Length: 258
Length: 297
Image 1 (spheres, each protein chain N blue to C red):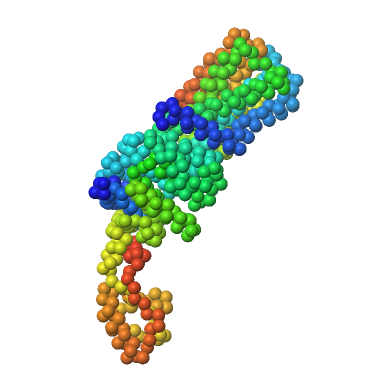
Image 2: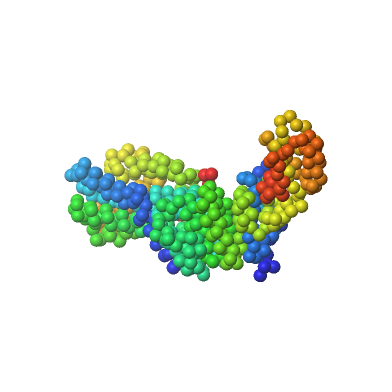
């Protein structure tokens, strides 16, 4: 096979692999839903201060946890899959065949983007049905663009990230140590108005806060117009471009940890 | 076809200084031949093979594999080789058939999936997930994935290491089946029996150099290397001649077994001593191999 057919072929099998990996399914698809239910139950009728006006907690947490679910699908799952396949010699075996590198990279990235959109749909539906959180039709295009740009950029960051993880065993601790604190300071777990300004400035350097902001803006009932958060999307895209450059320079197909 | 060279390696050098893993290796493999690279762990077998597969860079020498330099080989060339790596897992979530289908998609002219499964003895395991296979079954999947592109040349890096005897025999029979298809096979092993049974020609590699090569029958002048005589002497007997103790036994390797035996027999008869476990045999491949890899290269 060549060209697009080969890309589709690889993506089909990568999606099949993901759909049968129970830990990945739990952490990527189910955990964000569990977080949403917990946060909605605990903080149900409180309001959050967003840029000078108040919105329902649930209208805040639905887009925030979408950002978490996309990060999980595009960054964490991808890094774990790539490191695991590299260290187990699976990537090496594939490199001994005529398959072009681009098809392998595209297959895993399209898998991450597909799962990101699935997560978006699941959280949007639960938010709407269970908590009455509306996604305004006016800002739907902006939301879809934010999911796509966020997922694609975090895939690139993920490929770069994977080059700094030498063994399969260290992938999870390194990912958790990096990303978990970012969830707390980026307005994902804890609303932005309770995070000190200097800490928000730290979070502003990293992509997660910008993905959260772009999605929160689309969900905010006070948003006027189409809701495109171009500034945040631009920073996400810049992270993606930087990730691509680092990955292209450092990526290895053969095991590094032994 | 059989005069064509599948592999031509001249003075291959890999690594520098104290980590110089391959120090001037030269050999050729003809199309359709089964060629075994035999040697102890760390001798440079895998390093050499991985260069021929296009994974590792060389420091010096000339290498042609199916007419191309593996370091700058084309995609089409990758379609003509099949690689069974020494260590590689298979995707645990996919079934054997799905895995072979995935790899079939990488090639321009793959074999039918059912045929690749049959060639590797996996016809009954097509629906089993990769994560539920035994070590021997996984190795057969490795072989199926190497064969699905219908390669001309197959590399097998230690195909049976860690196998129980039954799994090893099953794998040997499978590899013998491949030779019937006219494929060129290069295998590395540290099992003498494996090289002797499968290979048309053997190269013994030690400390990064080829110390001997030949057919299993002639390797290391095995056919001209003399005989090995051994026996257990009676306690306290002073046996004349040049004997080396080996446990309770005395052993000698000699190109003149009849003369040595005549002297030994004359001494025994004169002393009234019989040697009940006297043994005379030609040198086995193992004797040759142990001599070769223990000599300073």
